[in-house]
Amino acid sequence: MPSDIIILGISILIAIGILLHHPSKTLGLPSLLIFMGVGLAFGNGEFGFVYDDLQLTSLIGTLALNTIVFVGGLNTPMKNIQFSWKEGGMLSTAGVIFTTIIFGFILNALLDFNLITCMLFAAVVSSTDAAAVFSILESKKLKLKHGTGTILEFESATNDPVALLMVVMLTDYIINSTNGAPTTISILLNLGQQIGVGAIIGLLMGKITVWTLNRIKLPEFGLIPVFILATFAITVSSTEILGGNELIAVYITGVIIGNYLKKGAEVSKHFFNGISWLAQSLMFIILGLQIFPQQLLPVFMLSLLPAILLILVARPLAVQLCYLPFRQATWRKRLFVSMIGLKGATPIVFALIPAAAGVEGSREMIHMVFFIVLISVIVQGAAIEPLANKLGLKLKPKPPQV
Image (cartoon, rainbow, N blue to C red):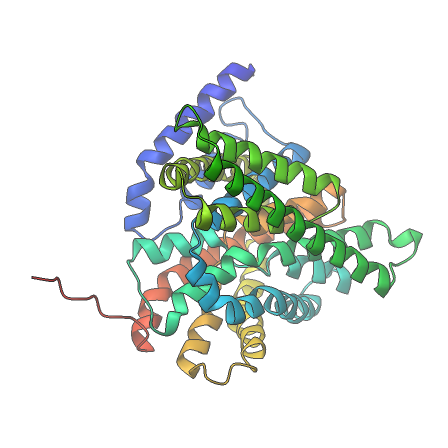
């Protein structure tokens, strides 16, 4: 099929998705369901077009994920970080590791995969999804006591880097296991390099961008978001070249720009919110195109029990372990956070990494991850408001001022 026809088709699908965005928010469903459904319907030969390119899908997914995390940083007020960094930071680091270990052993008992492959599978689904959390909290206009919503948002915006590091390291371990297992020192050095280089580049690029835009008067106000877009591209490229974690770098850059830019801050946020929406649309459509419905049915029943155990066992245990140092947190808050670990498109993007590398069983893993995400969005997305009401965590709306 000619490339111009493909571009036309995807553009029409994105336009339709934008028009359907408001109805999806009203129903409390993340837009990923609409776009992935479109991809599932149109990319499997029904209209003379079959898409199957793991490398390209992984590349587009990674770029889109970087964009979404960057925009998440732009929209994160510093006061939210100052309030939630302890609890949210524990959940986004130790929480991901605990979830991976607990769920990895559960999968090892349920599936035919070896323990390392099960740990890889668990790492893929260990993080929560910022787009899903923001979407559902916003659509339901849900305000929670004790800053619970802020903590969930901070966790979901910052836990992708740790999950990505684990997915990449476990994938490399499986692929290179014939050459000898990596030592503990090499793993720690790699982890330190990823976090350190990403943090340094993110900090430098954010400060340089803010300093430049606050002191130089550009001839056209609309050039400010274009300059920031170039900064984002430089951050991603330089971090990759120097061996850092791109998600850490772009998030820090976004936070600094979003909080300290004096000129053109609002127009830039509106511009990048649109870019983020476009990135999500493309990512979800491509992911839907890459998944073949006829291959989903055989793993549907196989995915049900792991999905349930992730929601009811692995995530709650991991959260309770993370909250051990925070004795002041009420049991209601801990229970709510442990039960609301919404998944989104991120785990599917992460599942493409071992698939593109040729890890055995990774194709089946993609389809199982798809169902785990779907069950999480439907079950946990629907439960968030009733659970908040049941636990008495929902803030009553303030009466209108006369």
